[in-house]
Length: 74
Image (cartoon, rainbow, N blue to C red; front, side, top):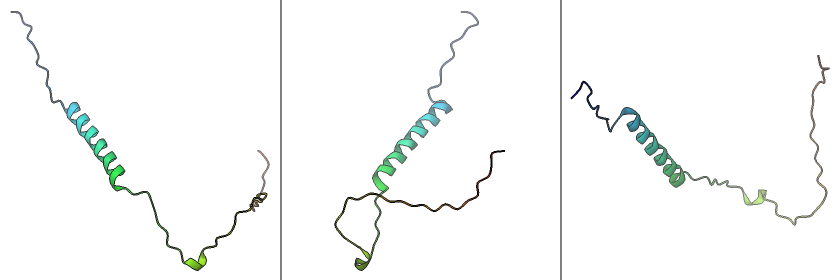
């Protein structure tokens, strides 16, 4: 034999453990977000504050009041 000897490769390295843990955490959080987080929201409004009427097509008129001061470019 010589001075060379075979170095055995570790199967559970810190990097591999962290990668598996990170992947499991990501999958777990994804399942939690999909299963338990409800994106719907509700709003309770009094019946007399709701207006229901027929929709009419017309021109859209929009006015936004902007207050400011114009300064010249330096």
